[in-house]
Image 1 (cartoon, rainbow, N blue to C red):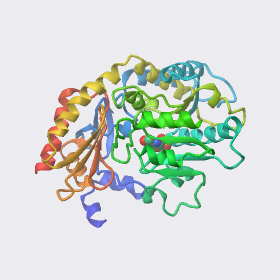
Image 2: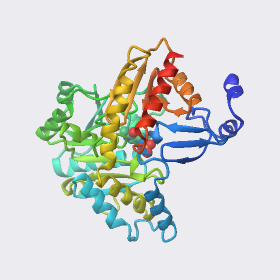
Image 3: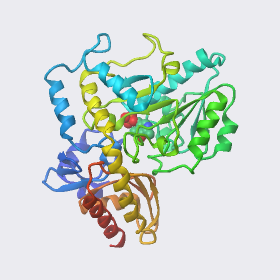
Image 4: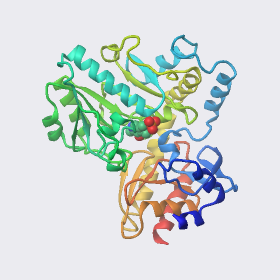
Length: 404
Ligand SMILES: *Cc1c(COP(=O)(O)O)cnc(C)c1O
């Protein structure tokens, strides 16, 4: 701790002094940003290879999104859902179209989208599927990350996320990720949903075996169970397609979206599903004061329009190949494994070499920001506006860190 303080810049110590220590940030204090680059209080520039855990898919301060936000700030920012505002219809219609679903329910944070999905699935289970009152169960995967609320941490398998936050919400069954037989075993006549990340981001960008997601889809269809895809981190262009499920040709019953939906400007999340599912909610049964507010809708509508061009998905697919080729070349030279899709990679560093944390600190010293996850794993998720040269630069800095 003392040693940490000595190495820590004054602005960093200021930031820590009156804060709960629920994060362990890298010792950098950022004051401005543009595109894939951020600048710290001393004027040093860093290539942002985390992009706010994919909340900044379009880069920092994308001009179209900033213009939409400015224009909306000058007109109307909040009404609550007690009244309708003029930004609401376009957002819901265009996001529903992007998802290929009938309806959208806007919330703010990702965790709220997950909570909404859980509530909708349970109500659907009782009212449509005919599950006896209070008996609904939802099957989730080991190693999941779906957020931080008390219900969500109830079905986390990460002891840091879960320990000492009980009593826990019942009604969840946990099965190994990627194991169809275990999933089939866990589903029974009271199962209302299977809730999964199509790629487990927080777990280290873990891609399930080929055929898993189609298998999940089939099991859900056969058992009259909703397939809920948490695409909060994997969706909206990150993997080279609009949704990660698309790469396996899979269409879930419900998408949970967040992070990039807010364009890196405001928190915006949403649940998208067809009317037979989301239609179970009636007035007064669910809501949020800020969900679907005018500023959020104005920004998120432009996010949906950026995605509708396909440009960002193409960039992620094309540049992702370059990123993964560069990283694969480091296997045996400090890396033991590389996983991921598109501009999203989880790297396992040779554990004897250094921890993920140390690797990220050294990358930071070389002007590249990334985030460790468990132990010796680090995660790269640069903004989709990153260039080929910048990717090469990031990979070169990583190579230098691993061989220093
Ligand atoms: C970030 C994340 C969440 C939670 O989103 P918050 O906005 O932090 O509440 C849920 N699921 C996944 C897959 C995430 O990556």
